[in-house]
Length: 114
Length: 118
Image (tube, each protein chain N blue to C red):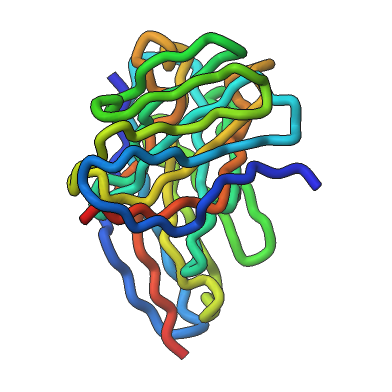
Protein backbone atom coordinates (compact mmCIF):
# COMPACT_ATOMS: atom_id res chain seq x y z
CA UNK A 1 0.00 0.00 0.00
CA UNK A 2 1.32 3.42 -0.98
CA UNK A 3 1.84 5.45 2.13
CA UNK A 4 3.76 8.02 4.10
CA UNK A 5 4.64 6.78 7.58
CA UNK A 6 5.61 9.13 10.35
CA UNK A 7 6.39 8.35 13.97
CA UNK A 8 5.56 8.85 16.71
CA UNK A 9 1.87 9.72 16.54
CA UNK A 10 1.99 11.58 19.85
CA UNK A 11 4.98 13.06 21.64
CA UNK A 12 5.26 14.98 24.88
CA UNK A 13 8.63 16.43 25.75
CA UNK A 14 10.26 19.18 27.77
CA UNK A 15 11.94 22.36 26.64
CA UNK A 16 15.44 21.79 25.33
CA UNK A 17 15.34 18.01 24.96
CA UNK A 18 16.32 17.08 21.42
CA UNK A 19 13.85 15.00 19.47
CA UNK A 20 13.42 13.49 16.02
CA UNK A 21 10.21 12.77 14.17
CA UNK A 22 10.72 10.16 11.49
CA UNK A 23 9.10 10.08 8.08
CA UNK A 24 9.31 7.42 5.42
CA UNK A 25 7.52 6.95 2.08
CA UNK A 26 7.31 3.86 -0.11
CA UNK A 27 6.30 5.52 -3.39
CA UNK A 28 9.79 6.40 -4.64
CA UNK A 29 8.85 10.09 -4.53
CA UNK A 30 11.60 12.61 -5.12
CA UNK A 31 9.88 15.40 -3.25
CA UNK A 32 9.26 15.36 0.52
CA UNK A 33 8.28 18.09 2.94
CA UNK A 34 7.27 18.92 6.48
CA UNK A 35 4.32 21.07 7.54
CA UNK A 36 3.03 22.24 10.87
CA UNK A 37 -0.64 22.86 11.52
CA UNK A 38 -1.80 25.48 14.01
CA UNK A 39 -5.34 26.69 14.71
CA UNK A 40 -6.32 29.60 12.53
CA UNK A 41 -3.16 29.33 10.44
CA UNK A 42 -3.73 26.20 8.40
CA UNK A 43 -0.67 24.25 7.32
CA UNK A 44 2.65 26.01 6.94
CA UNK A 45 5.68 24.52 5.29
CA UNK A 46 8.79 24.05 7.43
CA UNK A 47 11.30 22.43 5.07
CA UNK A 48 11.21 20.55 1.82
CA UNK A 49 13.53 18.35 -0.18
CA UNK A 50 13.62 17.94 -3.93
CA UNK A 51 15.85 14.88 -3.79
CA UNK A 52 18.59 13.16 -1.81
CA UNK A 53 20.98 15.64 -0.19
CA UNK A 54 18.88 18.61 -1.40
CA UNK A 55 16.86 20.51 1.21
CA UNK A 56 15.39 24.01 1.36
CA UNK A 57 13.65 26.18 3.90
CA UNK A 58 9.94 26.75 3.78
CA UNK A 59 7.98 29.51 5.46
CA UNK A 60 8.76 28.63 9.07
CA UNK A 61 12.14 26.86 9.31
CA UNK A 62 13.45 28.44 12.53
CA UNK A 63 14.16 25.89 15.23
CA UNK A 64 14.04 22.89 12.90
CA UNK A 65 16.53 20.79 10.99
CA UNK A 66 16.07 18.14 8.35
CA UNK A 67 18.22 15.71 6.43
CA UNK A 68 17.71 13.63 3.30
CA UNK A 69 20.34 10.93 3.19
CA UNK A 70 18.05 8.39 1.55
CA UNK A 71 15.25 8.92 -0.91
CA UNK A 72 12.59 7.31 1.26
CA UNK A 73 13.39 9.03 4.59
CA UNK A 74 13.07 12.65 5.66
CA UNK A 75 13.38 13.09 9.44
CA UNK A 76 12.50 16.32 11.22
CA UNK A 77 14.84 17.29 14.04
CA UNK A 78 14.15 19.72 16.86
CA UNK A 79 17.49 20.20 18.57
CA UNK A 80 16.18 22.40 21.39
CA UNK A 81 12.39 22.34 21.38
CA UNK A 82 10.47 25.26 22.83
CA UNK A 83 6.79 25.56 23.80
CA UNK A 84 5.99 27.55 20.65
CA UNK A 85 6.81 24.41 18.66
CA UNK A 86 3.84 22.65 20.18
CA UNK A 87 1.87 21.79 17.08
CA UNK A 88 0.54 19.08 14.79
CA UNK A 89 3.20 18.07 12.27
CA UNK A 90 2.71 16.42 8.91
CA UNK A 91 5.19 14.85 6.57
CA UNK A 92 4.25 14.77 2.90
CA UNK A 93 5.61 13.50 -0.38
CA UNK A 94 4.79 13.68 -4.06
CA UNK A 95 6.17 12.77 -7.42
CA UNK A 96 8.17 15.58 -8.94
CA UNK A 97 7.02 15.14 -12.52
CA UNK A 98 4.59 18.02 -12.89
CA UNK A 99 3.31 20.77 -10.64
CA UNK A 100 -0.19 19.36 -10.52
CA UNK A 101 0.86 16.41 -8.40
CA UNK A 102 -1.07 16.03 -5.17
CA UNK A 103 0.66 15.68 -1.82
CA UNK A 104 0.44 12.43 0.09
CA UNK A 105 0.42 13.05 3.81
CA UNK A 106 1.43 11.01 6.81
CA UNK A 107 -0.97 10.54 9.72
CA UNK A 108 0.51 13.41 11.69
CA UNK A 109 2.51 13.82 14.89
CA UNK A 110 0.99 15.78 17.75
CA UNK A 111 3.88 17.34 19.63
CA UNK A 112 3.59 19.02 23.01
CA UNK A 113 6.60 20.85 24.43
CA UNK A 114 6.27 21.62 28.14
CA UNK B 1 2.65 36.26 -3.86
CA UNK B 2 0.41 33.35 -3.09
CA UNK B 3 -2.50 33.58 -0.73
CA UNK B 4 -5.49 31.40 0.08
CA UNK B 5 -8.39 32.74 2.10
CA UNK B 6 -11.04 30.61 3.71
CA UNK B 7 -13.12 33.25 5.41
CA UNK B 8 -15.49 30.81 7.12
CA UNK B 9 -13.77 29.60 10.25
CA UNK B 10 -16.61 27.36 11.39
CA UNK B 11 -19.89 26.27 9.87
CA UNK B 12 -22.61 24.27 11.57
CA UNK B 13 -25.50 22.69 9.68
CA UNK B 14 -28.15 20.10 10.30
CA UNK B 15 -27.98 16.81 8.44
CA UNK B 16 -29.38 16.90 4.90
CA UNK B 17 -28.74 20.61 4.49
CA UNK B 18 -26.56 21.75 1.62
CA UNK B 19 -23.43 23.67 2.57
CA UNK B 20 -20.84 25.63 0.58
CA UNK B 21 -17.30 26.19 1.74
CA UNK B 22 -15.66 29.25 0.22
CA UNK B 23 -12.10 29.51 -1.04
CA UNK B 24 -10.56 32.63 -2.56
CA UNK B 25 -7.00 32.61 -3.84
CA UNK B 26 -4.36 35.03 -5.07
CA UNK B 27 -1.52 34.31 -7.44
CA UNK B 28 0.40 36.20 -10.10
CA UNK B 29 0.85 33.12 -12.18
CA UNK B 30 -1.45 32.24 -15.07
CA UNK B 31 -0.85 28.52 -14.54
CA UNK B 32 -1.68 27.19 -11.12
CA UNK B 33 -3.29 24.28 -9.33
CA UNK B 34 -5.96 24.21 -6.68
CA UNK B 35 -6.65 21.44 -4.20
CA UNK B 36 -9.10 20.54 -1.49
CA UNK B 37 -8.23 18.29 1.45
CA UNK B 38 -10.44 16.94 4.21
CA UNK B 39 -9.25 16.42 7.78
CA UNK B 40 -11.70 14.26 9.73
CA UNK B 41 -11.59 14.11 13.55
CA UNK B 42 -9.03 11.31 13.34
CA UNK B 43 -6.56 13.91 12.05
CA UNK B 44 -5.27 12.57 8.75
CA UNK B 45 -5.42 14.67 5.57
CA UNK B 46 -7.50 13.20 2.79
CA UNK B 47 -7.15 14.45 -0.78
CA UNK B 48 -10.47 15.38 -2.38
CA UNK B 49 -9.83 17.14 -5.66
CA UNK B 50 -7.25 18.84 -7.84
CA UNK B 51 -8.05 21.49 -10.47
CA UNK B 52 -5.79 23.11 -13.09
CA UNK B 53 -6.20 26.81 -13.85
CA UNK B 54 -6.83 26.15 -17.52
CA UNK B 55 -9.74 23.83 -16.81
CA UNK B 56 -12.73 25.80 -15.57
CA UNK B 57 -15.21 22.99 -15.78
CA UNK B 58 -17.07 22.40 -12.57
CA UNK B 59 -16.86 18.94 -11.13
CA UNK B 60 -19.31 16.73 -9.32
CA UNK B 61 -18.46 13.61 -7.37
CA UNK B 62 -21.46 12.12 -5.65
CA UNK B 63 -22.66 14.64 -3.07
CA UNK B 64 -19.58 16.81 -3.58
CA UNK B 65 -19.24 19.51 -6.20
CA UNK B 66 -16.70 22.18 -6.92
CA UNK B 67 -17.25 25.55 -8.60
CA UNK B 68 -14.10 27.06 -10.08
CA UNK B 69 -14.38 30.68 -11.24
CA UNK B 70 -11.24 32.39 -12.45
CA UNK B 71 -13.04 35.72 -12.79
CA UNK B 72 -13.52 35.87 -9.02
CA UNK B 73 -10.47 33.76 -8.09
CA UNK B 74 -12.65 31.33 -6.22
CA UNK B 75 -12.79 27.57 -5.90
CA UNK B 76 -15.81 26.80 -3.76
CA UNK B 77 -16.82 23.41 -2.46
CA UNK B 78 -20.44 22.35 -1.98
CA UNK B 79 -21.71 19.34 -0.09
CA UNK B 80 -25.25 18.41 -0.98
CA UNK B 81 -27.47 16.67 1.57
CA UNK B 82 -24.77 16.78 4.23
CA UNK B 83 -24.20 13.85 6.55
CA UNK B 84 -22.66 13.56 10.00
CA UNK B 85 -19.64 11.84 8.45
CA UNK B 86 -18.92 15.06 6.54
CA UNK B 87 -17.94 16.71 9.83
CA UNK B 88 -14.31 17.68 9.39
CA UNK B 89 -11.92 20.52 8.76
CA UNK B 90 -11.62 21.31 5.07
CA UNK B 91 -8.56 22.93 3.56
CA UNK B 92 -8.20 24.67 0.24
CA UNK B 93 -4.67 24.91 -1.18
CA UNK B 94 -2.83 26.52 -4.09
CA UNK B 95 0.34 25.73 -5.97
CA UNK B 96 1.69 27.87 -8.81
CA UNK B 97 4.82 27.61 -10.93
CA UNK B 98 6.72 29.99 -8.65
CA UNK B 99 6.50 27.71 -5.65
CA UNK B 100 10.25 27.11 -5.56
CA UNK B 101 10.96 30.85 -5.58
CA UNK B 102 8.40 31.31 -2.82
CA UNK B 103 9.82 28.38 -0.85
CA UNK B 104 6.38 26.95 -0.40
CA UNK B 105 5.17 23.97 -2.39
CA UNK B 106 1.52 24.25 -1.46
CA UNK B 107 -0.09 27.27 0.16
CA UNK B 108 -2.97 26.31 2.44
CA UNK B 109 -5.90 28.31 3.69
CA UNK B 110 -6.65 28.42 7.39
CA UNK B 111 -9.35 25.78 7.00
CA UNK B 112 -13.08 25.65 7.65
CA UNK B 113 -14.42 23.44 10.40
CA UNK B 114 -17.73 21.91 9.32
CA UNK B 115 -20.00 20.36 11.91
CA UNK B 116 -23.00 18.42 10.69
CA UNK B 117 -25.54 17.75 13.43
CA UNK B 118 -27.95 14.83 13.29
